Figure (cartoon, rainbow, N blue to C red):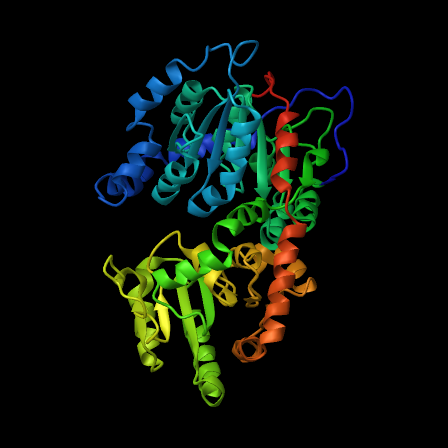
Length: 492
């Protein structure tokens, strides 16, 4: 675990909220009427968004929250005989999945604690119930960042510790949370070079976003160094603006390593792999390529490379390879199917497989499109090569740790801003490759398909890389245990 240099001096005053926070609130008041007319009302009348909007206004589910919070603790807060209260927030589906092992270990370490979970999206709330449900006292949608709603949520939950998984930061929420006396920590944090460059130009924005935290724990040394570079511009005079010091910015590691390792035993052994192959009606003697979390504009490139590889293999093994595509947005399945058709390939949808499927259903097609959620890990466990989505278009990349943990060699594209440190380290470990364009993509894919020894060696190194970087969650628990929880009386 690496920390930034200490910036706060002895005798400095207690932290205060940045002056910009008041401008933020004034802006909210001025924008209230247009936001009500053009944002809130359309969402309330939309079947798709009405439920989540009411939840984020803290209108629906309020009786359940009151019932669950009413008997949990007294207003005085945690103390002798009182239960420690955690509020853990994860933006959406992926962040919830990454935080599952942290929630489990918090429940083990503090068995009498009250743990609340929140998320900002319907998918995230559903995953909260599925993955965190057994350890939670309750769950709710993150309130909109308006002071009356935020104050109401904090007053009802009364957290001692607020844990933010990754970077869904809302200024009113974090500063009012700090005012309430809760200790704040960001875990699994990251910051891209682009975001860091912007914040270096506007250090007051960095104060607004990060200043309320006691600890900002980053996924990598690169993330820590980028945020430290920003924070050096956030000068503290004799009177501090915020609670965060350079010493509170540290590189701990990514919980995704622990999350992936916790799932390996569930999927990876030969018996489970054979069961999964049988469930999907697949043979085990084809080379299987998975493209996970793909975006629009990537499937054409991937499918084009796949067609070239398959054509070159006809003289070797009859082209016995298959491509599995798991798009980031499953509603794009039909669009992807049209791309496959135009390439002269056959495809099936995952949802076409009902209860009465027969073994061999999917052996006669070139491509299987997974139009379902939550099956990507199972898919990695049966495949041989992984392609990371969001890296061939300027998105920044998605989780490369999961396929590596399953012993798959990993191919990314050039756009890896969000996973730069992980992919760079994986490449150095010999488990990853980076394709700069379609030609390189084809060459790398063809090499891994044809050269079984190279493919297995790279997969082994990828798996070893993940194991070496495990144990991150235990470090987070130690930080949480030492987190200060006290009233910041100067926070306005």
